[in-house]
Length: 541
Image 1: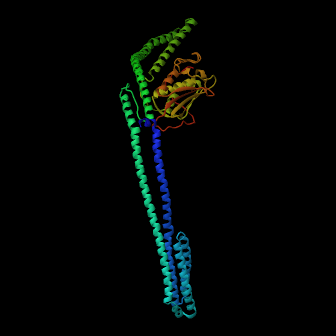
Image 2 (image 1 turned 90 degrees about the vertical axis):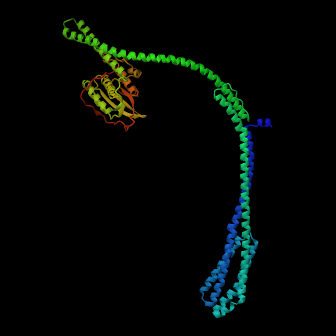
Image 3 (image 1 turned 180 degrees about the vertical axis):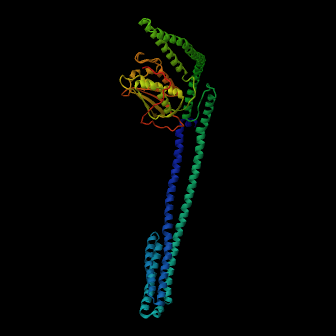
């Protein structure tokens, strides 16, 4: 018996059980369907045949009584209006007999009773009703009343007897149909009870079968798996029950073995990682200390270098002013080189100091209106724009979160850069605009200058990277590096769009102000005309 059960898979067992249950249930359903069909036919008989037969039988008696009453009234009054009721009663009688005959097709006795009623009615009309009408019309009411005697009454009584026999047979047929309906209803209830009992029995069998073939083996397997889950990775997992569960146990045990092997490797790797983390922690501490020392060195060095540079620059400029023309031309040239070098070193130190302070010395983010920032930028770059004959315009710009001094420095660098790298004999035109792209503001500084070659699009943001000589375009080469650091400090990115037809377009992104109603940039530019402000460093390309 055990070998037989082991040979059956869980699917096969469940399929066999469900097949037996399905066959039994389908058999019950077919029997109930047959009984229900017969029950519907019996109900149809009660509702659509015997019921109407009984009602119309009573109406037939009423129409006959109406005829007899109308004849009596006409014999008394001689009023032709009474004959109208008689003739309508005759017409109704014929209609009811035809309807009753159609309904009584399955009942031969009722049809025979109906024929008898029709014959008795016709005899009464021929022997009593028609003679009374003719006599009354010819001899008056007294002669008509004389014909309504006991014999006439006896003939109508025979009609009543025939109608009563018809009603009795109709009632008997109806009772038989009602009894059949009750029997089929009881049978249907019995079949439903049997179906319920069968379902309950099958459910009990299914529960027992599932408990033996599914729950018990699964519970035993779960106990073994739980021991492994608690950390006993060397506990062997063995299955029981159907083939699927035994195969599952084999797979789980294989997985246990692999996990045990992997855990051993993980322990070794964790030990190595802990050692590496220790080394990294030491390096991180060294880097923090080194960065702190570098910041301190950069700050102190930049300040300490300012004083001797100021002295060198001041004395070189004094020497240039006082002894210009008194020495030979080469001496004047050497002095000029010294003054230019000292001034260039001062600009480099100032720019390096500004670069190192970005993100380190912060005033905190606030809501910044870029329109107001552009007005400040227009004032700062006014002198350079007037010298170059440059035009600066900007479209409506958004309000964002950031540090206003840094954002002013950013836009001033871009505008100054566009003014400086202009084409000869072409008045510079610089336009700043913004648009909403993928949930962030994209700000563009567009000019009609010399442009940027695609292969140099990334190099222009590298600190001290120059694409032109300082004689052609003066500067320290740190302006766009400062711009890039400011943009990244505000959570954005910056790039050079090399697809424009003329000049250059530098684009950068900044996050949208969440509490602000985002609005698209307007298309109509407006000029900025504000007083001159402080100068800003410009990049060299």
